[in-house]
Structure formats: structure tokens, C-alpha cells
Length: 452
Image (tube, one colour):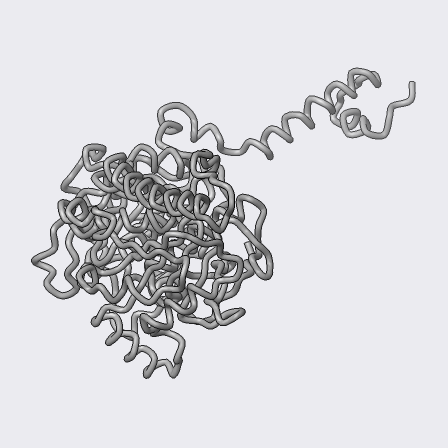
């Protein structure tokens, strides 16, 4: 009886098998080999160990772990300080650092007050007093993870990691330090505690898209959202009244005052940076960088907003301004006919804002600007930059990657840069950026197109 070629080795070994039996042995051998190759060590992730991992369902970072975010290893960072949007950037940077180290970030303290030098005057506020903790973990599940100090088993066993500083502490050295502390013996510590400067000042190793993902998971607590709802509702009520007044005017011939408005009345939000300390800062920045399109006067902002192509009037213009400008009546005068300016004092919310600390006031203002049908800001302002980033994300989800020469929902503009028809420059965030540098510190190299 002839033996098939693939059975000759078994014959040599003394396995006198018929063709059918030989085939069965060969198939069984192949199955065992494939099992050994394709499933090498996955048993180590079973049982109790499996509950300590959150598997990453999103695209991985270019610099990151391969398997998951451990829920039994943590990263602790210093108190996060400065303005709302500096704090959001610092928080996201801490999250992405924890992700790189394959650790859960322990919920950090934010700062309710605004002090740049008097650190001892900073008023800490818990993250979950501003943003929804559970919502964050739900939205960012598999990407980054927040934990609580009550999750710790050993609160005295932290390893302290000193962040470097100074000119010699380059991004390369910083990244090497992180890589080193992502290996044994540091992996054995339950907590790595980073000490030194606050996360906003850490070197940036993460792309814009990763920051955007973290920002999307930050949802304000209900109390703050409710206050923002009240402001937006009041703005739209005033806008609706203006539209009705125009409809019942004699020029229109027909009284349509009683006709209900089927859609919410649009409004414009302008982040108006003209306060004294900002003007001093931006003038110095213009001198250092040899750029002239950073500062904008009150008159220039009013003129450019009035020249936005296709802007339908009458429309309410919400002015997000510093408290020092609330008692300056000149910011409400000089606007083009049909643009009706309001700030929180004129809306009747000055007292409501003042009952909250600075951080919460900024969060309400941010939400009001974010929801605006049209937003106009300064491309060198972190506040304006993050709003445009959020709005760009919305457009990308709708399949829009350019606002150049077309009407899009939620358009954004930079009033410090001259655009078409003497209006402000259309503005979308470049989502392909390798770091958040331009957003953190501003840029006049902006575009109405985006590479998502």
C-alpha cells in the first residue's frame, strides 16, 4: 500500500499508519501547533487578574501600552492650577501620562480661585465638584481611567517621581524618564506620585486627537449645566423677542407676531479680550514674536463681527468678558445695527455668577460660548482655542472637515486675524497636530480647513 508523502516521517518513526489515520494525526498536530502559537500566554489575564484591566477599544497611542489600563496601579499628580482651560489641558496631560504608564489617574484637585504666583492662596476644589466623575469614566472607558483615593490598598507605599525642570530638561529626557518608570521595579509600586511643577508645565508628548478625546469626556456637573441653561435660555428669549418685534413692524406689512418660532433663535458669542492685563500681555507677546495679529481693540472686534458674511440680524451677541469690564458701558455701544450686545450683568446674571468661585464662573461662560450658533474669539487665547477645538469635533462627527467658503453649522472665527469681506478669519482646529502647543499658547497660523 502506497504511503502519502506527508506520512513518510511517521513511517520512519515506526508509525505504520494507513492514509486516513495519518491524516488525522497530522491535523491534530497542526491544531496543537496553531494553539500554541496563537494563544501563548493569554491565560495569565484570566481569573482575578482580568478584573484589574480595562481593555483599550480605541486606537492606541503611538506611545502607550499594548494590553490595557490597570485599575490596581495609580498615578498621583500635583494640584492643578491657573485658569479653567489651563486646568483642563493640565488634567488631560495628566490623564495621557497615566495612560502611557498603564495606570489609573487618581482624581486630582483643581483650583477654584485664580492666583498665578500666590500659591498659598489657591483654593482647592475636587474634580467631581466641577465635572461628572462617573460620566467621565463611562465616556473615556478603555482610553483613560480615573480612580479615587479610597481605591488604594496601601496609602503609604507611593514612589515619588520628581519631574525635571530647566532648559536642560528636554522633551527627550522627559520621555525617557517616563519610559524608565514604566518598567520594573517601578511597576511594582501601587502609586507613582509625581512631584514638582503642575501638569500644564510638563513637556507635551501627546497628539491633539488624544487631548480632544479626553476633553469630550469632561461633562460639567448638573448644577453648573443648569446655570448655563438659564443663561442660554435668557439669550434666546431676548433674541426671539427681537425677531417678533421685527416681524410686526409696519415695514413687513403683515403682523406675524403671534406666529410661534419653530426653531431656537440663534445667537453669537464673542470672547472679548480687551481687559488691561490682557492688552499688556499681548503687546509684549507681539514684540517678542514679531507678530502684529494678536491684540485687537474694542473697535476692531466690533467692526469685524459686524462684517461676518451671511450673519442674519437681528441677533443677540453675548459678550464673554472679564468682570472688570462689566461696569464699562462702552462695550455695549458702537455695534453694527442689528447686533444686540449683552453680557451677564445686562442679562441679570451678575449676582448669580458671583455666588460661584472663579473656576465655576468660567465654566458657565465656556458652556454658553460653546453652545452659540456662531463663536468669535482670539486665536491666542486658550479659552477661545478650546472652544473652537470642541466645535471642530462636532463638525467632524457630522462629516464636515472644512468651513472654507461654505455655510456650516457652528462656525467659528478669530477676530484678531482679518478674513474675507473685512470680517474675522474662519477658524477650525488642526486635528493632525502632534502636540497641543498651538492651542496652549496660541497661533495666528489658523485655517478654515482641518485634517481630521
